[in-house]
Image (cartoon, rainbow, N blue to C red):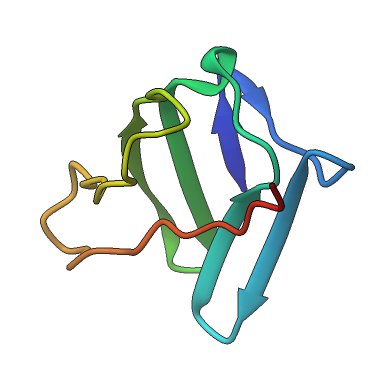
Length: 86
């Protein structure tokens, strides 16, 4: 489950939710300034619940993407990537 601005993110034209085994990804197809903020990923199973979060900053369109960091030390990292047609 992905959460932004206290609301669950549902898949639509703007957001794509991917999963491959234990890897879960959120793809934001087109990023706008209002997409900046803290995103949470929550996982649930019979053993309990865990969550981690990442702060996303939206910069100008000519600036390079950067790594985002989870605040959970058990997560070793992830890569933000996107494709843009100009």
